[in-house]
Image (cartoon, rainbow, N blue to C red):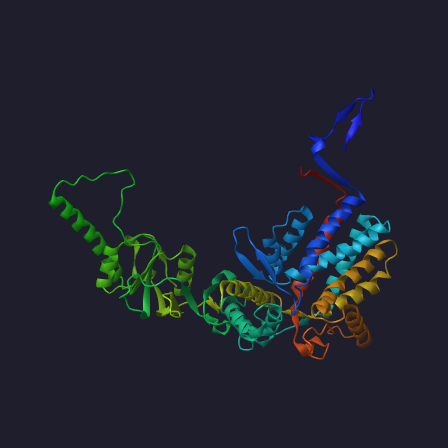
Amino acid sequence: MALAFDEYGRPFIILREQDQKTRLRGLDAQKENIAAGKAVARILRTSLGPKGMDKMLQSPDGDVTITNDGATILELMDVDNQIGKLMVELSRSQDYEIGDGTTGVVVMAGSLLEQAEKLLERGIHPIRIAEGYEMASRIAFEHLERISHKFEFTEADMEPLIQPCMTTLSSKIVNRCKRAMAEIAVKAVLAVADLERKDVNLDLIKVEGKVGGKLEDTELIYGIVVDKDMSHPQMPKQIEDAKIAILTCPFEPPKPKTKHKVDIDTVEKFQTLREQERKYFDDMVQKCKDVGATLVICQWGFDDEANHLLMHRELPAVRWVGGVELELIAIATGGRIVPRFQELTTDKLGKAGIVREKAFGTTKDRMIYIEHCANSRAVTIFIRGGNKMMIEETKRSIHDALCVARNLIRNNSIVYGGGSAEISCSIAVEAAADKHPGVEQYAIRAFADALDAIPMALAENSGLQPIETLSAVKAQQIKENNSCCGIDCNDVGTNDMREQNVFETLIGKQQQILLATQVVKMILKIDDVISPSDY
C-alpha cells in the first residue's frame, strides 16, 4: 500500500501493519464518503414533512422505538461508518442548538453531497466546490434575513407562538391534537421564561408520562408531579396549604461509621436499645412537627416503625423521591433541601396551595401532585397515551415544540415553511451565481439545486408529482415575487403558506444551512482514508 524502496532496491515499510490496512485515496475516497453520507440522508428523506413516514427501530435488548424525529432515528441506528457518524453528529448538534429541523438538516447535507459528486466527475477541484458552497451559504443566510418577518407576542396574546409550534407538531404522530399540545408547550415555556432577558430554562419544565388514558388527557400542571404515593395507606390523600419539609437525611437511628458489634445478653439491655431507637424516631418526628411541617418529602426510605410513628402523629410523608425531583420541588415551593434534622427551621419549609394523591384507572398506580406553589416557575407537562411508545414519541414531539417556543422568545423572527424559504433561497442563490466569475459559480448553482431537495422531498412524501409541483411553485414565486409560496402538503388548495399558517423559526433555518454546509465542506476535504481491514 505504501511501499518504498531504498537505493539497493530493497523494500521497506512506512506504515505499521500495512498489509492489514485498506487505503482509499483521491477521487475514490471522496466518492465513497459521499455515498455514505447520501445513504444516511436517504433513510431520513421519507420522514420529512407532515406526511412523512415513521421509523421503527429495535435495540439489541429488544426495546422498540417508533419515531419521526431525525436525531432520535440516527442516534438509535448505531451507524458504523465514520462519515455516517458525522451525519449523526450533524443531526445531534441541530437538536442541541435548535431542537427542531433535525431531519431537514441531514436531507440538505445529503443533497449537497449529491450535487458535489456531479461536479467532482466534471473534474472540478473539491476545494473550489467547498469555497463555492461557503459563498452560496452566506448568500442564502442573508436572503433568509431579508424574507423573515417579526412576530410580536405578549403573555396575553400567545397566538403568534402557538402557530409555529403547531407547524412543528404537524409532522409528528400527535398531529391530530396539535392545537392542544402547542398551547400546553407555549404556556409551559411562558411560565418559566424570563422575558426581560429573553431566556428560558427548559430544565424547569418536567415532562412526565403515564400509560393509560388518551392523548387528549395530556395536561399542564403549574407545579410538580411525583411518581410516588404516601408512605402509609392511611395517611391523608389531600393536604391544603401544605408546609413541606424537604429532607435528604433518612428517618433512622444514626449508624457509626466504623464496624461495630453490639452484644446484648439481657432482656433489659434489648429493651433499653429499643427505647433509645424509639426516642430517636420520636425526636425526628417531633422536630418536623415543631417547625410546623404538614408534609415530609424524604430522599431516603424509612422503616415501618418510623412510618407508623409518622402516621400516628398525623404527619404525612413521601419517601424515595429522586434528587432531581427534590430540586424541582424545592424550586417550585420556595423551600430549602435540609441535610440534617438539626438544621430544620420554619423558613426552610416549602409552601404549596394543595398537595394531593391521584389514582389512575383500575390499577394501583398513584401519583402525587404538588400544585399552586409559592413560586410557580417549575411546571410539569403530564402526558397520557395508549402505550409506552406513544408516550415516548409524544415526549420527543413536546420537546421539539418547547424548543421552538424558546427560540421564538430569544429571536421572534419567522420564515414561512412548506419549503417556501428553501425555494426562495434557491432562486436568490441562482441569481447571485452569475455575478461570480470563475469555477465557484458552478458550485453556487449546485447549491441552489441542492436547496430544492427539501421541497422536492415534501412533495414526494405527500404523494404529489415532485418535479411538476416544485417547478410550478418556483414559477409562481418568480412571477408574483412572493416568498411565501410553498408545497401544499395537506391538500388545502392554496400554495400560500401565510394562509395555511405554516411558520418556521428563522434561526432554525439559518442554522440548518450553516451546519449542513460545514459538514459537507469537511467531507469534501477528505482525500485519503486509511482504515483497518475487516478480516
